[in-house]
Image 1 (tube, rainbow, N blue to C red):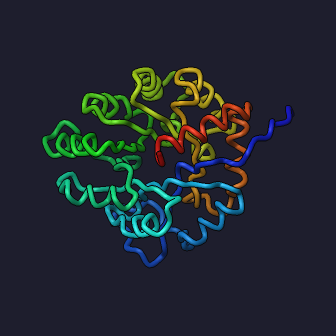
Image 2 (cartoon, rainbow, N blue to C red):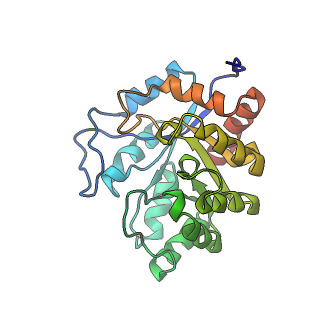
Image 3 (cartoon, rainbow, N blue to C red):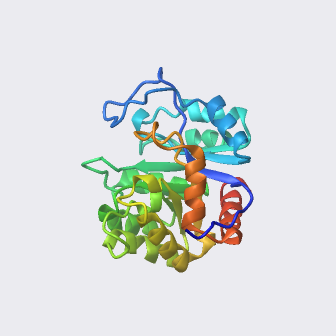
Amino acid sequence: MTPIAQSPAPRVDAHAHLYTLDMPLAGTAWHRPPTDANVDSYLQMLDEHSVQYAVLAAASLYGDYNDYQIDACRKHQRLRTTVIVRPDVERYVLEKMKDDGVVGIRLQWRRVQDTPDLDSFEYRRLLRRVRDLDWHVHINDDALRLARPMQQLEAAGVKIVVDHFGNPANGIDCEGFQSVLRAIERGRTWVKLSAGFRQTSAQAPTAHAQALLKTGGPERLFWGSDWPFAAYESSITYQKTVDDFARWIPDPAIRQRIHDNAYTFYFS
């Protein structure tokens, strides 16, 4: 096996979750966490791996209960978060969230059978508010369903961040993944290289990462650990996610540019 060139520790972990067992689970929750994933444990994990900053992803397990991650961002300037909101949320509420470290909304549609209509007035209004706040829309769905919402989000003029490589299930030629590549080329879409352990094979994330890199360069990519690895808590470690990233992107200079790009996008 070819040795992996080493680089400084990740500057930004762009995808992680926080929750505690006493938080109210949504009725649609697909997983029941076995232990707390609290802010103190996560910050300790970051410090142990010399990671300076992190971006939290709103967890669908808790619906629009965003309180815990917002509280974490209020207390720790090294954190930012996305939130899940109802489409009728008022701009004044969103503005207060922005003051508290919120940087975007999350459309967590994976495992959701009937997804909302982004062309409805309610969602067009929400997306306009997101655009006016200079936030982004953070979307997680299967690649087979991504093409349509990507078109709608682009038409709304918002910045788009796609989770987990776009969750490609049928290789780089599937229409959803290709729609992500085309969106990157048009200039308002970024993709997280995260949760490779959820893909169908150990080799697949490298192929997907290289296709994304070839299309958009490091400026359109972020890296995320997906801590605490929901449903994989006992088989994945934080260090493994760092090592996986180095396998997907072997060049340490490119990895550093990806880390710096995440800092610019989320914190500057």
